[in-house]
Amino acid sequence: MKISARNTLKGTIKSIIKGPVNGEVVIDIGGGNLITSIITTQSIDNMDLKVGKLVYAIVKANEVLVAVD
Image 1: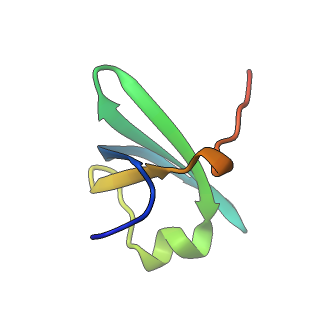
Image 2: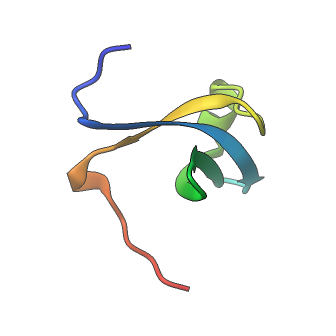
């Protein structure tokens, strides 16, 4: 896999919550750190994402969102 993004983090899917349009995918990147990504439900299905699957979180500076609880 070759990509232009500089920040690629390998991890395992911890949870998936699918909605009608978008879904939330939580990725465990180790060291007690989690990354949550919001992607389309269609993308979840197309990539056959499942809990426990090894994936890569790819972060581009112009696509980082910040949220608070």
